[in-house]
Image (cartoon, rainbow, N blue to C red; front, side, top):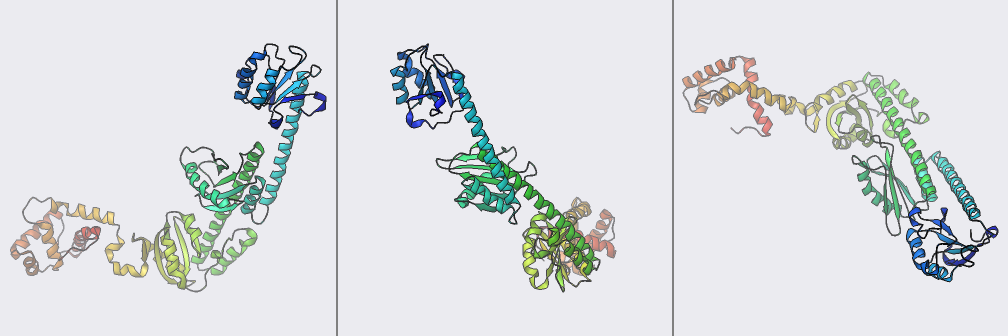
Length: 492
């Protein structure tokens, strides 16, 4: 501005710092105008209320407030700029320009306003141009990775994209590896309840911004950017544009995956009905052209398969982790693993929740395999194979909590019976000896007539006949419940 000929301004001090940004012009004849300033202003005065003795204090106040420069009008209060003001401004490195009487202060104000408008226009033009480049990058085949790479170039730094769990998806730019690692720690703060809309972290030579993509509680991911300098308004606009494009891409990706899940479920329904040909046609129709198939896991395995019924903690995570055909099935995930790869797939599934394993099944036996897997899943074991259920015994199929409640309720009258005779142990010995009085009495160390009396008392208290086969079965299950709950059989 000092070099604009129409203004005829003369630089009297601070010639080496004329590159300071001017955000506004303030005209004031006050001895202390700083209460009315915000910083970065060009202060204009004629000094009519200022004398040479005021120079040092006046300049110091302006510098402390952060003004951009001082314009001293001559020809009214002072014929020339007092030397004391020139010396004070030079010592404080404050630009000072002499404004001749022929140049009205309003002309300087208009010039600054025009320069600011031109600067703003350039910023907006740069922002629009950058937005166009980012949009074109979003249309490329690389998708989000192309946007991240373009963003790093636009901000002259680095950029990193994370999913909603904080896992790094892509990064680009110099220093991206170190920056992404640091940003990963900050993401935990943004995922916490009541988190801020974004985070800004700065150091002596670096500036990082981390912001969520999407609104709570549907955050789709996180964007982190870093540069050597603080981000300008244009930089923030560019980053926000990239964030919007990435949010849209992640949202579309989720929608595409949701369609893929439904297609897989429809194909599985056809497979269970024995129509493998139609299931294959469904997957083929929704293949690459429909932007649904994303991996070879959508292929229906040929030949016998091991059917897995999984109860995962996170269905989406399990579906992403399995390298075989798998589909949501109500609250479960059903996977079809080729026999040769079954153990590896079972291990992957077990890392995400409980797994029930059906027997090998051909194309027409998948429904049977799924039924077997669900029966195995009901055992409550982390991984249970249907073929192993028989070896676990009948009680392995009963929920431990329900079994314990049943046993406690059924045997309560015996445990509460106020007699020295141990009716529970007498009943156990009688059942273990299959109703043989002499053998049971000998095991207890009592006379057989004593045992007969105790068993009559058991029958009276429980309202059940210990000689009835059905009652014996219930009583034996109840007596076995504490053994199973403790995890080890009762010693003999």
